Image (tube, rainbow, N blue to C red; front, side, top):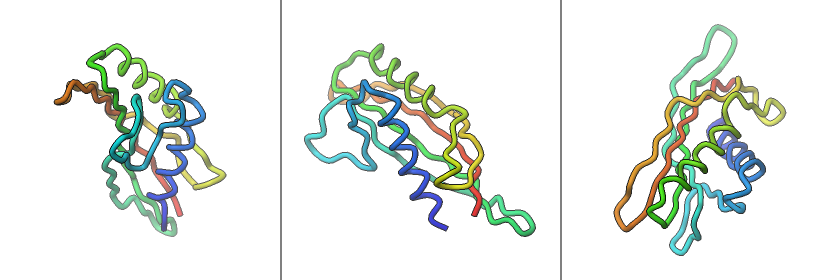
Length: 127
């Protein structure tokens, strides 16, 4: 099952399509020199949720939103936009999944005059 890779790709595609303020800056992993604001996919993990005759996993994925200015309001808006784009959404064409559930949202101060937003989603994936 390549469910983790598929979920990461469809989440990235959804954020790019639904959050224009990021101007397409949504990456699996950022590199030095990445412009702000931007979004990267953070840690992920899963637990086995298989039942008789159905292979499944409960997957958790962290989405990180970054901004170079110490302006929490801008990051809070971006976090709200990402949350709205993902809450209750699914892409059953690309993978058999239940709608995404938002399990955690936070905004943090980071060193170097940066602000960091976190949106954590959970999905039940089958296959």
